[in-house]
Length: 251
Image (cartoon, rainbow, N blue to C red; front, side, top):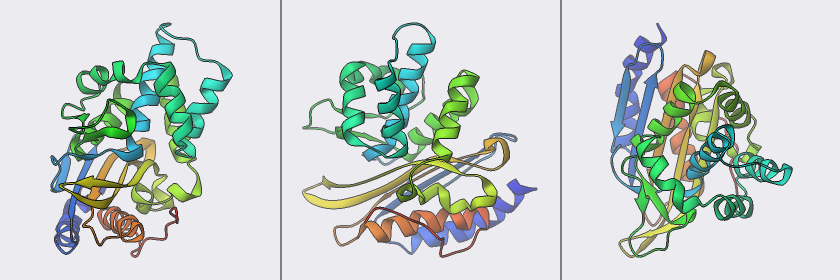
């Protein structure tokens, strides 16, 4: 069984995490059996970077489905640009129009992102949030398990169709696993030190069987390339795909 294979590969995944500088968290959930595998630090709060765009689009879709808001063609285009191209201006337009700050309660209480918050000292804005690896896994689980089927299908199709520079992270599971993901990458400060974060949240397997979330807070000397390759190789290790994983990332 695939789940048994993942269990047998987790030792290698933990060894990879232990060999890397910085802090990595990994959560994999089998939606069929309910088994959850964790490795590294899955509770540390990290800047979300662009992974939060998935939560934002999910909330807007659900509000539209409930008749609480009406989406224009421009709104839908901004949503696609936010997810596929990770466009920051499009995301800011959605945040502003649909009261992004007011969505944080939904993210925490409904999507299971219970430790999501605003980074201390910063204003309430989508670029100033932090959450844990587990929060991201809970978000993806909500999308796949509880969202309206039409909205879920839109997000699944869109995440499978992200631009080539997001073909890393969960993408490392390999094409045979039909992955989809929303990646997040940025240089951010913590404790007076600026460093990269490279995160990925998504799914892999037939019928999106596996929820996958991986976060990586690099040290000050780490690079985007190191982060993207590390999280991709970690996912590839979990799913028995080729390493080094063949990826494409910004830069």
